[in-house]
Length: 217
Image (cartoon, rainbow, N blue to C red; front, side):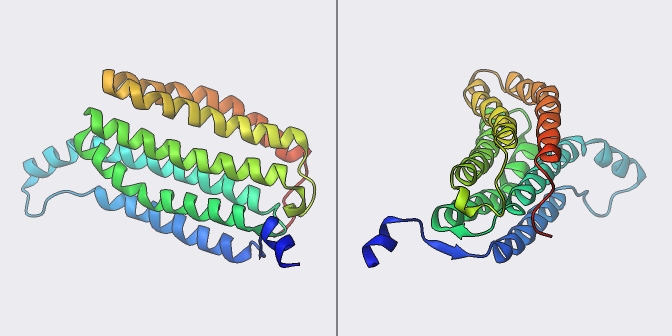
């Protein structure tokens, strides 16, 4: 009996506590992003205008990271509302992804401060690649282990989610080496991802509708 348990996936129980933890970590990470947006104290009117005009890198980094985290959180909840049980692998992948999410305010601050310098762009791209790759691993694990699903996830839904996440992984992963050649070109790759995500996002939303609503509230 002991050997059988050791050989199979360890059942960690209900996903509710993990969802609550995830919501908290995403909320904290998204809140920390705004701490990078600030102006010095004691400025006169001319100085304040100048300081506000110089805020665009911080605001751009904030908007990009907040939007990405919002999308990650939404997709994470969509997946986990279809989960019945958590096993050891799914639990470890989720905790690892939350660790990467909690770290994102750091590369966001570096990118805002150092803009188009190679280390800043490469670090940010690597962080997004890691988060997305872990989400992709979670989706693939859940799709493969049907006994963890509250109800069967349709094949088309599984493929749509994987395509959507894979597009982000590929683009941001490619932008890491590109950043060492041309940081602006790496950022342009991120921008080119927008129309791709619009298409894959539509596929995923359509598959979610066709596959039925979330199984738990």
